[in-house]
Image (cartoon, rainbow, N blue to C red; front, side, top):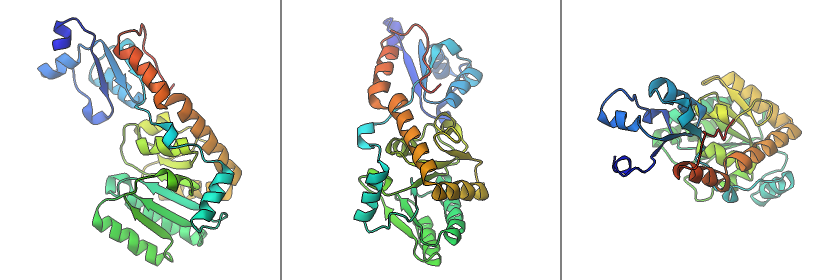
Length: 277
């Protein structure tokens, strides 16, 4: 309100559907509805701006929140082999990675069901669960690991996720709802092939057969099928991982995002930009 009274441009940025508003309801929402510019981090959020908040499409830019890609450098196939050997893993054994808060809405129970099937197909494979969370769910993961020949490594919270990107072959992302998932951006930047739930911001990052696969939420069979294909086809997963890393460097790195953000919030943009087109 102060900015509008003093004649300064106002930009509103929303990062998740839970933050959306209806510009016809309440003083707060009507005020939000009168901004000069809007930043959505995904097309899903942009579309909701239009349908729910009745915002003019010409005022909305799609700019991802971005990541520091220097912290998640691309891991070459040779470096991955060396990282595996350094932690005592056989370079030919496939490794699956889950990196998120261990909670139901992040899909941990589904991940465990998927792993039961995968373990029967790849008895020597390893599954890393990286992240803290609910004790009951962590205990369930330990129980499943025991039933699967202790093939699940549960790390708890860690300081450097990139170390686990470097030893993994496939990243599994099973959240039921997200904006633009930071953990997915980080895994892509590191060059991991991934199988993901077909939700929200994932549609702006995952292009089937190019950067990774999208799977209907809760579809265990499809997760197993797609992960198995990536386990079996090294060149395919390496190609997907490199494409994913390149995409993040071009569209979602801090260096790129900050420049576009500056143009928007300083009122220098004459028409909206779509950085995830």
